[in-house]
Image 1 (cartoon, rainbow, N blue to C red):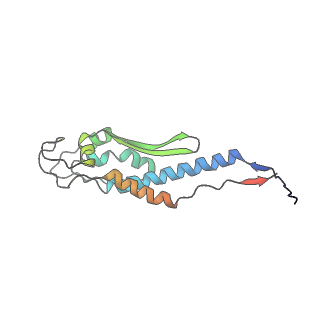
Image 2: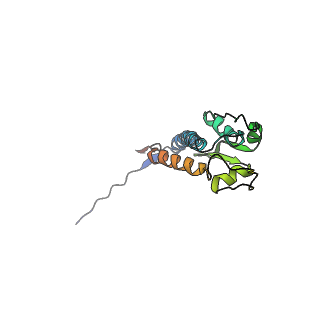
Image 3: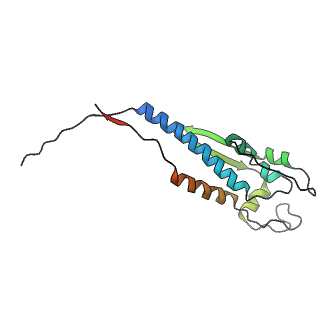
Length: 160
């Protein structure tokens, strides 16, 4: 029995593939940031505006408006939230982009993950909205649903 083998040389345009991946990764990171911040802010109630204002930097980077209306019985702490929130889109490496959100508000971090009682983390009376807020979980779940449907660019391989 005789077997014939015919090898073909293949060519990959590496620069084009990486360029396409970089552009797609950036778009996916931006859309993921939009989806994440939109889902997260739905979970965080407004009283003084500080908690929601921590999302403004990320929201601005991805084109989302954060509606904040301070309660008439509350001090305006939007500036405090802006000083204690950080977020945006950044390139980690070629073909790797990400969005990020950070906050330094102790009471928002506490309300995010646990049931906060009177006397804890600056709470002087009962909260109108029950905690935990789980805003990160809500944002992550929304992004996961989006990314399951996302498509990466095709890599073109041609015969030489």
